[in-house]
Length: 187
Image (cartoon, rainbow, N blue to C red; front, top):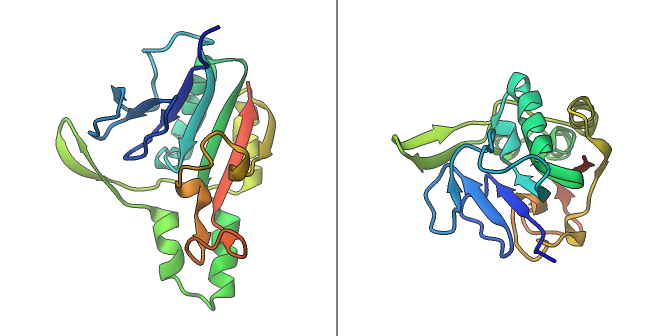
């Protein structure tokens, strides 16, 4: 039996053993250096898992449906889409709890990432934000089912620190407020 095909979309500098890494940026571990919204290198129904951590929000709401449909195309029946995005509800709660400290929520809301692509270095910014009802609705509209939140501690990549484990205060993973909305959906 062959190993499961697991895709790590928008992986950036994070390398997860056993995953195929896809990103626009230029890192040695990138298997496919390309945008993550189109995956022509994969046939229909081939991936067991697609993981995209804090990269989906770089697509606007009009692009998001098309992107999810492309990812669904690549997933096997019963394959899992695992998304992590900044959680608007948690960011609003953080803003409230800290007496309106805007600087604490600006980064997760608007993002700013430098990448090196074929045109040189450029900046990317978040184009939208989600709460659970909005992301669940979008996933269901794209044909996914069993949309639910997941606990990063119960994933195959739990031992790799990434933004699915973003807390305030930073790294307080027991008492802190999780700022990432972690959602799984099944094809």
